[in-house]
Image (cartoon, rainbow, N blue to C red; front, side, top):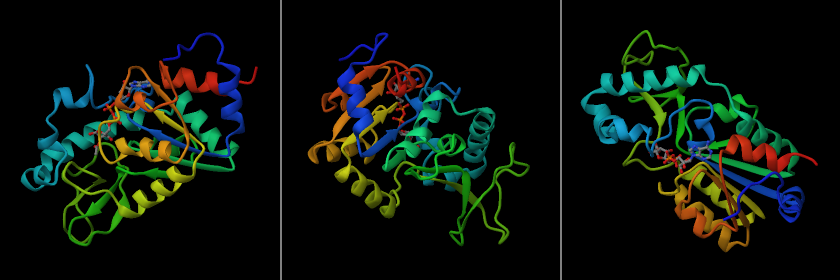
Length: 246
Ligand code: OAD
């Protein structure tokens, strides 16, 4: 494990500067410094709430009002949050690298708010809703919602357009991610516990294809074992340090 002191090793900076195709994977940790709770750990959402009562299709079928009340509460927190220096550096990376792919597990939309244009939101987006009858999706950004649970113009309920436990991810987004992972030369894995599939396996795909892997996290994760370098600390501090020109 490398400890980030006042200076970043020169060879690491050169590797970052000279990379051609970069992939970044982010998890809840990138948004923690914006005041958005993560899922696991001491103050994590899954410590105080039961996923099976709030984030499954069965929970929604049983009690859509309860599920929507929870999402309305989270939307309220996220609406007040601003992108932090970590999100901003990633948006700058998108401009800097000729080939750049961002895959996020976050549904908060903060990467787009920071200016990222092409984001693979692999777990969906909590500002988008889906009609349960017609399947059509649209953005519903009202905070707080005036109607809980909200309805589509066709009269049917809408649900958050996010991936719940027990549901499959969009195969088109998986294919797009896999293509980037097999062709990148540098992969950043930032602020994810690395235990939720299929994203947890994405770093191994890049590793097998020869990519150099940099992990940024407060603590060790299963990804640390395959990362070439693991930087311990806050992504909102480490990312700006990595890209600072001396
Ligand atoms: P977790 O809450 O599981 O993990 C957050 C990770 O971020 C932990 O490893 C922390 O150590 C790290 N972390 C916290 N603050 C940080 C900071 N300031 N800088 C760097 N790292 C920090 O979140 P995810 O791994 O994103 O899925 O969770 C994956 C999925 O599990 C989520 O997308 C969600 C959840 O159930 C669905 O809702 C489908």
